[in-house]
Amino acid sequence: MTPSTDRNLPLFERARALIPGGVNSPVRAFRAVGGTPRFVQRAHGAHFWDANGQRFIDYIGSWGPMILGHGHPAVLQAVQQAAQDGLSFGAPTEREIELAEAIIALVPSIEMIRLVSSGTEAGMSAIRLARGATGRKVIVKFEGCYHGHADALLVKAGSGLATHGHPTSAGVPEEVVRHTLVLEYNNVAQLEEAFAEHGRDIAGLIIEPIAGNMNFVRASAAFAARARALCTEHGALLIFDEVMTGLRVGRGSAQGLLGITPDLTVLGKVIGGGMPLAAFGGRRDVMEQLAPLGPVYQAGTLSGNPVATACGLATLAEVARPGFYESLSARTRALTDGLADAAKDAGVPFAADSEGGMFGFFLLPGLPQNYGQVLRTDGAKFNTLFHGLLDRGVYIAPALYEAGFVSAAHTPADIEETVAAAREAFRLL
Ligand code: KE4
Image (cartoon, rainbow, N blue to C red; front, side):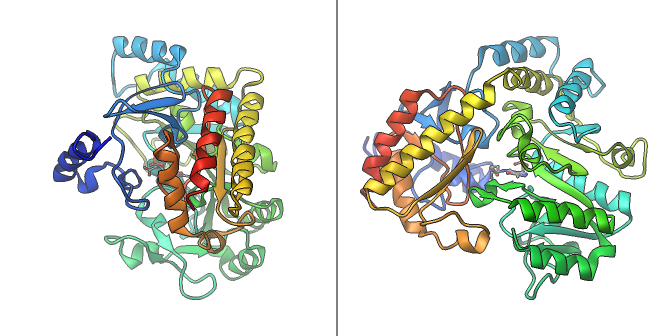
């Protein structure tokens, strides 16, 4: 492929003339890793083909939703049938009840649920609900965790310990994030201090129980248990943001792995199977504070969309099958073990972790426990590895801080091809 024959280039030029950065979500623009994004023409199974007809093994899977792989026949059939029956009604449907039942069966901490169209909408609504249900203002979040782009959550740590946050984006007034506390992930002492000082004002604590927005950092069992206990002690709501981990890391999601029952759970990605669908749910007494029952307003034209719910239901039917996660976990672990061997043989510092169909790796000697430790990674080396893999037909996240995803469609041959490509790419570092 030469610049004059690479069709991604003119497409990117056209896109950048009309769409900011040429993309409809920033991470797709390759700005962190450099180079030209690949414009996807079609995808099937574990693969997609770009504008040049080049095939890639896909470890993004739409950033998590495509747990079955692209084009699963049962999902396509359900979506096509639903589309025939109508694209959107703005009125209740039986399928919304069926999807609510399916999610609640898989996430028992959820007694009542509200469907929305994106993870951002779900996270934003959960925060408002926590504040409305408790009558309090303060929200606790953690550096390195991302919960969508709602104003109150675009915030970085304040100057001192557990001081109120500052905006991470232009357009977010200081006043909007004044009541958001940003703490260090896995820092139990700081958590204790924050609740000691602000406990009576804390409406909710929102956390990614496995932080996929720091690539892959697990909340320690002690940290998660302390967050649960402190929320209970102080009357704050524990909110697990499982948009990424929900039904991705296992049948019980991350809350099942940790044995923690949150008060609210935010879901997305897998439950929509690739269509615009997300949700938030949890304790009935809290959820009943939502309009039209209670005083906390929340709404959406396309919430519970009939085509999206068909896609989600068909996806959940497949992941609920016996053995699904056991097989997926084994395939993901085979990938990370293979990558670790390749890195070792090339003398490259490397640490990986995985759970279910989600994985992460760091060009570091050990697994980081918080955002500051993740920052120690050499970005330039990661970028060399990214392009070394891309040039060999392997598509991982174009950013150091993103997790990777394996689908049920990835075969042992895909894993072997990926590891072989990595063997060559690690030697470029
Ligand atoms: P969306 O609004 O993008 O559907 O979901 C926001 C969100 C909320 N919570 C968690 C834990 C998330 O990971 C996300 C979105 N994840 C990113 C990838 N890190 C989506 C990719 C993108 O922004 O384009």
